[in-house]
Amino acid sequence: MTDGRVTVSNLKKVYGEADEGEFLSVVGPSGCGKSTLLYLIAGFLDPTSGTVAVDGEPIDGPGTDRGVVFQDYALFPWRTVEGNTTYGLEEAGVPESEREAIAERYIEMMDLDGFEEKYPEELSGGMRQRVSLARTLAYDPAILLMDEPFGALDRPLRESLQDHLLDIWRDLEKTVVFITHDVEEAVYLSERVLIMTRHPGTKKAMTEVDLDRSKGREAIVTSDAFTRTKNAVWRSLREETETGTEAR
Amino acid sequence: MANADVPLSTDPLPGVLRAPAAIVVQWLPLGVVTALWELASGRVVDRAVLPSPVTVAGAIGDLIATGEVVPHLTVSLIRVAIGLGSSVAVGVALGVGMARSKPVEDFFDAFLTMTYPVPKTALVPLAILGLGVGTEATVSIVFLACLLPVVLNAYNAAGDVDRNLVWSARMMGTGERRVLWKVVVPATVPEIVTGIRQAIPIAFVALVSAELVASNRGIGHLILSAGQLGNYPRMFAAIVVISAVAYVAVRWFELLCDRVIAWT
Image (cartoon, rainbow over all chains, first blue to last red; front, side, top):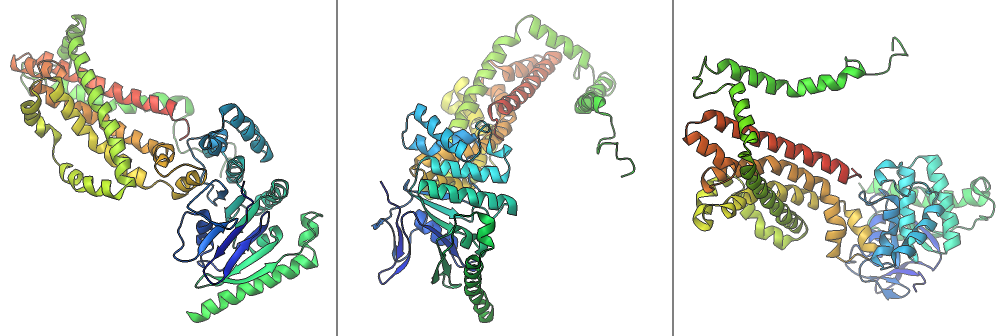
């Protein structure tokens, strides 16, 4: 069983690391390679130098120890909500009777009960993203790799899904690597925020987020700690955008 | 904006009349052609050469009543089914293979591009030479004629499959080859269906052309033999029969697709 520690490094130094069960966000100017970083961890792309390791073992392509959630959902349009959710279990050879029970659990977790037989085409964007999460959680990867998953949704939906994701993260103890361009989202969700430089996309800073998350959204976003951290990340990111503009 | 109670509509006809109106519009061209045919027959063209639609209708009745058309039609339909069926099997495999593998693409690309403009019916004499007169020759012509629309649609669509779908499946444990069957083919189904839809009329064109010379049975043979005997009502009757059958085949296929592919 994978613990879920992700390390991205080259020969000289560790570039970034997500500890098991950690929620790590990655922010950076657009075009800095945030998504590329995620695809490297996913194993879709091969690093030209350096390594990506899970629990210290270099990865070899995509694998079921990790799960990806894309901004555009990437659901299989020819499969129903249930069919999408059981896909990973089918591929893992889980017997059909168990598959349905497991899928149902995650469908319920994502508030999708009653929609099992619907096709993605028939669902709204927010629901599709919840199906995508259910599909990924169902085969129980230790690490969730999320590529601006809520970027295409409007604000109320985005906030409700963020809270939903936090609940899941706490309950299921997954490691989450979360790509976003939204500083507020990054700070609200994560324990640490990795800020990337403009070009080449390397690590600029790693900011610890120390928030009391026991109280709920309103208390969190209005707290001094939240504002302070958010501003710090924003300033750091702003420097990158500014230097980028000057360099042009 | 003038009256909020009036529902928005771009159609000048009230709802109840729309469906019947559509049917009239749909069949109007056929009606016009039949009317012109009736007018021309015996006036512009000799009745012996261009028998009137009524005479042809009678000949169709005779073909059906005597049961004469049945063996010919059966043979023709079997040939279409085998030719089209095998072109779908080979075409999908070839199209998907070309889209997902550079060596396969390189191997077939130039060949397909060069053979594309060749009218497949021009290969009938060659087919007779190699396979003799009969089902083998006609089926192979139908197969070749249908292959390209199927290949091209599958090829284009399989090359355009959303990368994230493939990646998602790979992440969930689907191997690199298996992904073709689990993701690329299902994602390509709508375009494969379009290819088959395009291939059905082509199959009938190829069938009749091939049967004219490369067969002693089938509707194409029926058309030719009636023509050679100067029995023009019978010749036209056979043409109308095969047109109607081709039309029904296309419509049936469209209905089938609507039912089977619920997710588009």
